[in-house]
Length: 115
Length: 115
Image (cartoon, rainbow over all chains, first blue to last red; front, side, top):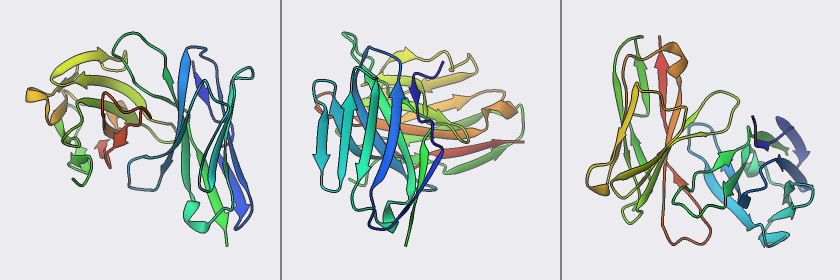
């Protein structure tokens, strides 16, 4: 039962253009969403996050959009650079009154930015 | 502080052997997580510590797996009687209790190959 889905295993974009990575979720209890970037032989690195009370969050070239009614979020990278080539994971955290705060990850999208 | 470190980075073992991995979190982080990542998938939650207390375990953590975090600092993950299905990347992450972004900081992982 995949609660967080990234349906595009790969995406290729020309340098300078916009990259749009998509993520869908099924669990209504998720209240916080994060994007991580992963280079080969390294652990995932936090990129940007968004709370369920917001619909947009920006940080430099990166913007995350959240559509709660559609249970969909997307990461926009503008302009895309060759150094952005990596695997991007969408992750979600459930609201919980207890102590558990584990993240549920999607399967990732390999972004390739072509020079 | 250089971030989360894990040792070893790679481990090759024969089926039936026991292996132990170590994770050193960022020093001021009180939360520590173990995840497992297989090829083409995102990280999957295994277990979580708050200080020295192990507060949650995933169903993925069979009785052959045991994790400890003595004194609330470094953590170890032991797999007994390894099976080929245990081959994966084992990731450790740490975080603050009070970090409003809920970001988890990941180590580089230990890649386990069971032959």
